[in-house]
Image (cartoon, rainbow over all chains, first blue to last red; front, side, top):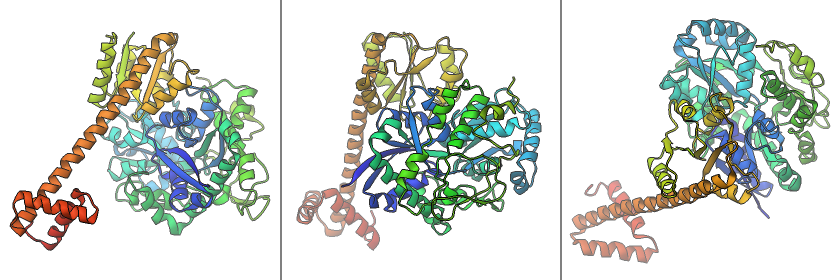
Length: 404
Length: 194
């Protein structure tokens, strides 16, 4: 018997796994009919999920934590048993602004510390307080942008203006001069570069080498009541993700995502993020960043609780929330490695033995304990070398200057 | 009670505004979600904001509601979280509503119900318009096919139409599909062009 699941998504390259699960038969093999609901704002995606119009959603990981903690309208406990990708963001700035930065784009992207210092100087020189578009206050992009800017003393709430805009309107806002740059999921940065409006300044992968991004999110009570559907969906997505990661499939995947019902942007722009060939400035040669966006390898989909806690630490750092043990525990509980393990117990997916790890501690790939198969975790350093210990959230926070 | 409608579509906003005025609300403003709309909204300090659920600018609005220091009281989505039927109807109709803290729910409910009815009515009008548009373009296709038959087969208009209709019946297809096939074939064969 086929079960129909309605899943809301935003037109972004990292909705790939959902599209492939539907279009390449992986969902069907699990007896699922996926009805993917294209949505144009995170607010509407959230509302469709919490008010039950859809059973699951392609959600910004920090938004899932924020909704659970009551920071984004109606508080509802959400559950994320599966990560749809890591990495995939790009910060682009108007070409005139980028003139103050390292002119060699390859070096600019490879050296986020140097670029951050140049960026701080450029902020002071710019004709107004730079207006930078972010897609949502509770987005991984905003978290990484804040983290990166603050490392060189830029106060993201004082020295720049962060303006929330939907990704699909960023290019238009650049053209109208309403914003001086933006950070968003692909292909929107590439679209602005291709239009000759902007240059790449930083990419997510160079700020946090394995940055948490979109998660598959359910209402927690629905997830508890429908374990069979949840498990089947997780299994279908795990197989779809492996397909998405395979380089030989990238062109077909870009074609699929370019369709009007998905991203509705040219396939060659979408391909850049998938293949990790980033064109940083219009007509430049592509720069290879093979880990620009990951779907499957290195246990990418595994929802490490330590990553939910890192998100929580950033909420506290930026005074979006008071720190308390209760808040911290509720944030950690949004990520559900237990459900991931249950769903994939009889599969060949490599399974981490632990549910938490140090974040940012690996400079080189590391083989780790896994219930089956070989599991290698990729390098996951933050660009400034800090390490997040999920057992020491307070100590980690004390290391930042939070006084304003 | 000041009500702001944030909407791109002139027609939908008008349909909603009319309904609200008929119901006795007179402090109503329509703001398109473009440029500095958030600053405008801040100055107005409305009691109720109605917005299309499909508008990509909802995140921009919610950010303003979160950070604005100009708003004296917080504005949150829907007023009565216990009224699930009402919320369900609003979401289905594509209405999102933000209501200032402290406004009594019995004062807001009629506004919301009216918005839901008007959004649904608008969706119906749109579907009908779409249907009419399709009918019009169908008519154009059929006219062109008739013209091809008239010029190539020397038929008069009534006979050309009769021929299309009988072919459609024989093939179990719609007349417009037969007409389209005829036009395509004629284009391919370069016959007569028209």
